[in-house]
Length: 246
View 1 (cartoon, one colour):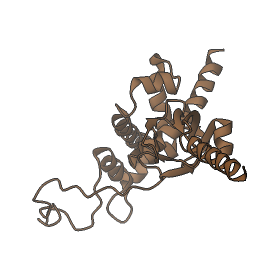
View 2: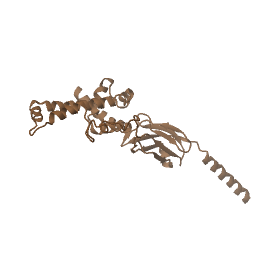
View 3: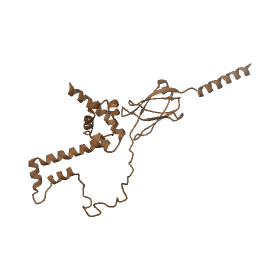
View 4: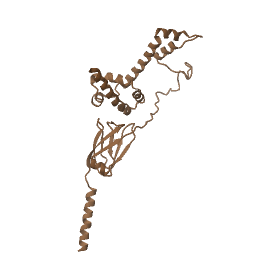
């Protein structure tokens, strides 16, 4: 009798063990952020099952998991993040992944095979001489001069020409930034994610190229960081726009 009870108990343990191993995966929600700002198009992979998905424009996602499985979060210019699913996380049905930035070195690009032929090597200009744009050359000519008492800076300062040329350099720099920004974000990102009205997209572009941090990220071609910064700038821009329309 005792052996029969022991056998039944053993069989029950085996059944419970098998059931635990084949528990179905549960669908759970999640949010991916960088500095508390939601991130879109971040890849989310269940490292055990191989299931993959990506975050929506608001940083959310859904994926099926079991306890002790791991989710891996990856995106360009972001450190890979790994989160293990605990019983508490699965019971809550929600997981939040906080991402961090990474610096990706840009590869060296060879434009042509004659990179050794330069104006400096040919003796056209002295070595180490700074190269200027047309607007910068005009400003330099206006603010420098020859002789014991250079007259150009004095005369141009009196006439206001130096101030005008400085503005010309600034305008030239803005034009270059706007040219680089053209096509950087698609229209849907402006209107759907940033909530910028279509008629105000150009005005918003001019607004954000006046932000030092955004310009630095744009020049570094760090698209993830520019998207993050654009979210905060968009909120400020819309607030200013609303205040002007009152």
